[in-house]
Length: 455
Picture (cartoon, rainbow, N blue to C red):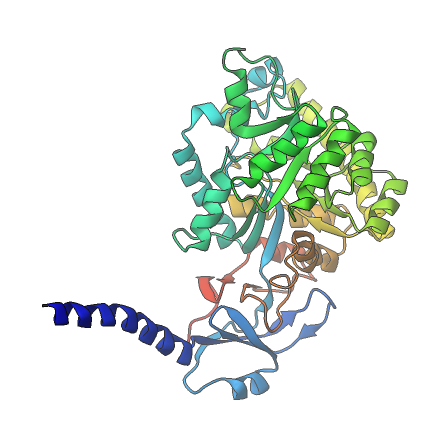
């Protein structure tokens, strides 16, 4: 009996190693052929094109005849016909655990931050488990629309985004590669006010980490670090002191974490610049001098164009039909935004500042999946005057650098993860093609294919 147990024990250790050896000696290899391949860094197009993938990495890119010659006999081939291949898309500013339904007009007008309040109160209206499952659904929908990498920047409960990230990484649920920021750092009263005092602190702490001093700012960074976050997100208006902002950035950088700063006004943007933040999110009130300072310091401008038009009119449910006065108010507001963002876009492009683009999508959009809703940013950037190649760069190679993942994603080249998407037409001729992604591969695995079949 002891001899039999010894044999079983030996097999327990030997068999897995045999399996690993077999897997290593026979890697999974896939050849993808397409009519065109767009390199966002240079703007060059390779036509026709082929990509050889070994396991989850890109091994070779080039003309089909040359790449085919490097492929082993019997290689699995996917022919995408005349489609255009691009790197997997990157949403650098999203909220996958938030799905806010626009409230009725009367409710919105009666509350501080009334449009957004229902979503913020998910901390008490939805269990953490249900919320993560909702996030898993939205993550899958993002992936199906071609977003193979996302940076989630808050509104996820205490650790919902890190848990979802880890589940995706472990292959338990499908979704994009994900950077998680944990709870957003804010000043007291930034998002929620006048709550029942008996419940206020527990509600706020489920969603945010309030800052009340420089030391408190450091403690907030460390509190997020406990949940293994990938970055720190801080929201500032004109309510956080320069010392507090400096403490956030210093502590985060000491922990090798980047800092993304939600800032709109010139004063808050300047505070982020002076503190040495890594990116400024939204930044609609930025001045030309601040753009110059950001360029000189290498600070990214993360553009969030979702709300640049009549977005709120589009997401209003029929049951929440606004009044005539509200419709006129929304239309006038949308027109003012269009004029402002056109000027902002041109100033960003002319300044030479590094920029990426994120959807900031956190709303329930009737008739669209989360991925389809996130993809509406492409046409909005085009309508604001951004050239198509710059739009593609903003969600591929530029966004990869913003994340610090330029060695992993953002371009189709050897050594990087096999994250690819394909569209039927030419996105440089018509950027709306990116709203209709027809092929998605993440990590060497086909997640969606409406174009071709394996040969």
